[in-house]
Length: 52
Image (tube, rainbow, N blue to C red; front, side, top):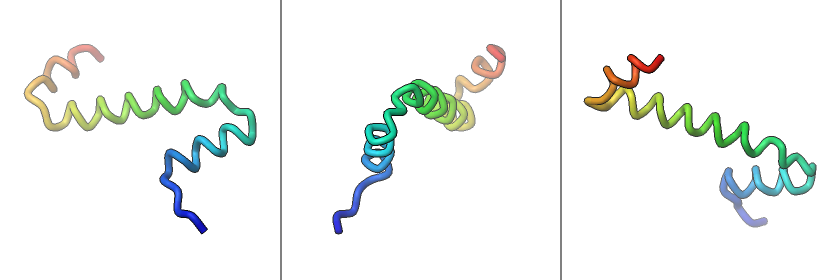
């Protein structure tokens, strides 16, 4: 049994189920998560908060 990464498992799921429409949603969620992490530990956090 081969261990796959989370990304590999997710890609296999999307291929088998023909759910390619989920890719933009997943990318958007990742970008929002990265923005949240970046805004908590950055000098630019005041400017990021001003955007919202």
